Image (cartoon, rainbow over all chains, first blue to last red; front, side, top):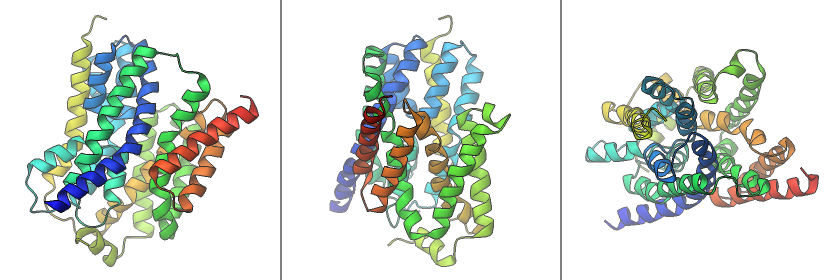
Length: 243
Length: 103
């Protein structure tokens, strides 16, 4: 019991900086939602239900273009397909004896950052840690979107500019520590930066949406890394067994 | 708007939820295939890296500010700073460099 409570509090602590980043990102996403004609409350609803930056970007631009519902479904699927991979990854870290409803709730909360902070912890995934991170960061996402739609472009450009990199700062804080320990991750990170940049410069590929490029590059680079440097048995055991 | 905004939102929400929850509920046993294990091991780092660059230099008013934020964030993370401190470092770097560069 006590450990569950501690994990939940840890989750709140880890979720707070994530929520600050979400607030900033959702705030700027609010400018796009505003152009699409959404009300602040609709933005809040879309954000707490989707909480996916690329997915919401796709949603808002589709609404602005009066796309069909099927198109919205497809764009959401493509923009968020990486969550399929993260969900697979989490399934491997789930305590097989944990009650089933945890899978339904944890699944709802998968975002790049919540996934990142929870997968970085040793042993079986703690649903309580996940919930702690969710309950603080997802409402902040919704609030950011609400205020972004409501206040529009009132913030000076420098502040928006500074706030908008918070999210990337967090990504970096997640990928650098393992890259420092494992040379192969460092190489994968560098290759990802390089090819991601090249993809934005290459004809045809640069015209794809950012979400689609992310999927293609993730699959290719992870496949190459897995073939060149398969994870050792000991590392696999480390991932499966509890600490 | 001729279409209903709420239906748009619910369609996107439903698709997002299905994507997130299907593998978690369908895969109940440990995967033993070494390739799949390796693939899943690399995916989170690769996908976060791909999303970080070059987006970070496109998010700021001038690209150099974003590049500076990338470098200071990596340095802070290498020195052992956590999520929130690194995020602050990146924001402050952008504020400072845009101020200094006047862009």
